[in-house]
Image: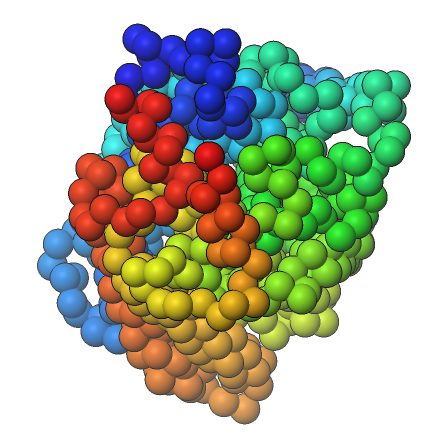
Length: 84
Length: 479
């Protein structure tokens, strides 16, 4: 294949790529993805793992070492165990 | 555990949340990706250390053609890039997608096909490199057959992730999901374009480096950042400091980063404007990098005590800090005046490892420490070994980057000094090359510890540690 033709094909692919990115951006604005941005930051939390709950403290478990009383994560997760 | 034949539906098991169900649905494919990733990590590390030792003992293994520097070094690069980092990133991307979409994974069989084809491609490609069948282009060494296998594997992965995304139950697209979607749309296109057979000469060099840098732009960095944007707030239990900044970061990243590749050819025989555009874009990268740095720091600030208790947070925060460092370093390195010293020296090797190891690999370790218990419903045994893993690789990579940075700058200064013979620029790097091999040994020991822990996790062996909530969930899943 000659280089100019190859170049044209590449430019076409690049344009398609650019159009995909533009379309994604316009779609995001239209579907209000950028409205109420603060709420968006909370989608990673749920009822069982709410804001304030530490979800990983392997080194803090009783078998290894006693964490200080100020460790919120452990406190929370003990209270979770006691409640049925 | 067989989610395939016994799919758990949300209505049938109301005691498990959508989050846990989506975890279970990807458990097998993600474990497969992680297991092969860890195998390639070991292979890649051994190749890397071998290549490093050859600088200290030039005759070592020199009688075996397959183990000469010119073959071991590209084998190291490809085993790590397309093996460990890509497979672990794929597993991480699948897991984050189902979590953030809150659905069970779609087209799971494509994921199994992907992991199979990927490994066939890697095996064929690595053996080809060792037997001397190398394309001669950095990052594109694999022969065409291996490249086709990997491209098809990546398309399978993309289709499954896009189909899962389409079925999402969450209206808002979280910033991590933006990064992942950009990756799975762009990387297959990029990889195919770069492997097309019609480039030659200077065009080939330009396409080569456009590809190599964009592999970082659209695959390694976005998955690393997606993981950091998920794990830091999730582990700490606090939303991202400024969600607005995170999205500004994503879109400016998408706009600037893909222009960067040609800065690898500063001083090369390309049109000057092409290189200048690339340098300008490299400096503009300060904008997305600063937004990410501010966000990650201000999300973690006040919670640094949690680094003591969470291996995930340790690895991910270490990686996020190194992302800022490596990006600043990269922007400066793109400048012509700095490139005069650093180009063609060990400095570049230090920079590459700061990016691919201290940033991406450390974040992937953190992601694996977080996801494994949720996939196998088994807590990590021997926490003290996790600490050894962290300190060995953290000190190892610190020593690595430090020695390469100093050694590289000295090498560059000596090479630019016309009054010194060329050999002095080689001799001056010797102690730093020895330090690098020592760093490689530390990193290898750390990896062996990690592989031991990972094997125990996959087999659900080792001391059973009471660590809710896996206990309660495991009782429902394995009655």
